[in-house]
Image (cartoon, rainbow, N blue to C red; front, top):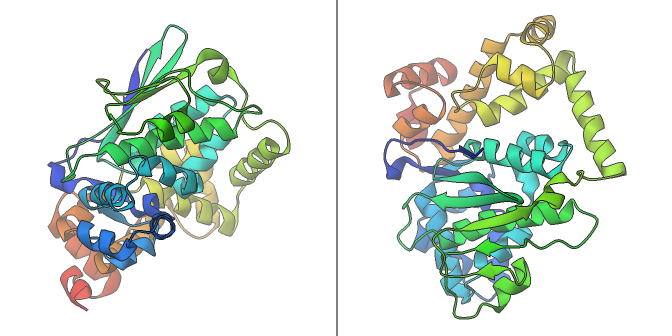
Length: 339
């Protein structure tokens, strides 16, 4: 069975990426002797994007940034270098779900399923082969200079995730890249000798023994499970905080329902609603609170149009979003942005 997760967008220009994908990028540029501010200006990225890891940013700006960074540093493998610096914990609740999986295959399946929560600029596909699984990355044609570094970043993160959860040094048996670098050595050093260039897709192969390996043996795995169990057992203020944390990730997605949140917390929707009622709130009220907070943050700090922000927060029309924004903040979204 093949499976994939991606989000259809209304036009390439509307595609977004989460700003957390840039964590550590400025520092890496400086270490490699490039002018990080000049690269940001070239991509049209304001400084505040690097200060808030939870903003949705126009995907073309981040993708251009990665490509310009590779040129400025003269490193065709910049996406892989950045992957080594990027804390995968920036995936938030999705990271906890992946880390609590029983096997590497379950964790990678979770990553494919959750990928669309962090960007609608691309997709991650999992395709079963006879003795393993291919994970293929692709992006919409949103950048001025291609999407090579964004793809490398995605594949690099997959390999690093698998590597850190196995007791032995792991390299994928096969990797296929469209890219044809002048110097293949950094790519061989990262992926291993199984990497091939000039292919028809960008994909990494995970073999069956690796897929079957148990995740995070020992104290680390127990700690993750205990954290998940504490989430499940949440009451009062704790359950409110847990639901709001999940909603901040899912609120822009069609699957943002009490059934989905209950499943993530391993409790029934009825039990979840009962606990929220006991805490003096409701699921609908928490969605409203989270939307109000995200609306203010994106209107004030992001470069997205008000229409796109409305869409990301689950509103069917800009007019409905405008009415909600005025109810929340006692001013129009346009006035908030100007101020």
